[in-house]
Length: 98
Image (tube, rainbow, N blue to C red; front, side, top):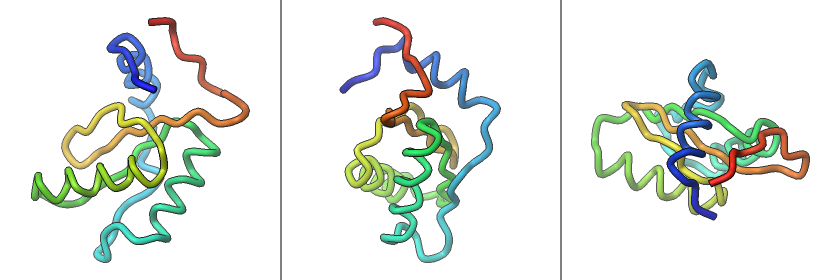
């Protein structure tokens, strides 16, 4: 599933007031962190993850790993903040039509 620009803008607006649900620590991306991100996505559908690294290449690898492991969609990566979206069975968030 791909998000249209309209859907991304909608999700960014919803995520604006959110606080980061998961923060990566000194150990980086571990199985426990990925499991917590997946659990948070199942509960909230739209979350922020804080990635405290200044290395762009490392940050890109972390984002790709999170997206690949959880099956979530990357909405935006701005600074140290990653916004992820994944629909759950309850479908709490209804995306606008393309």
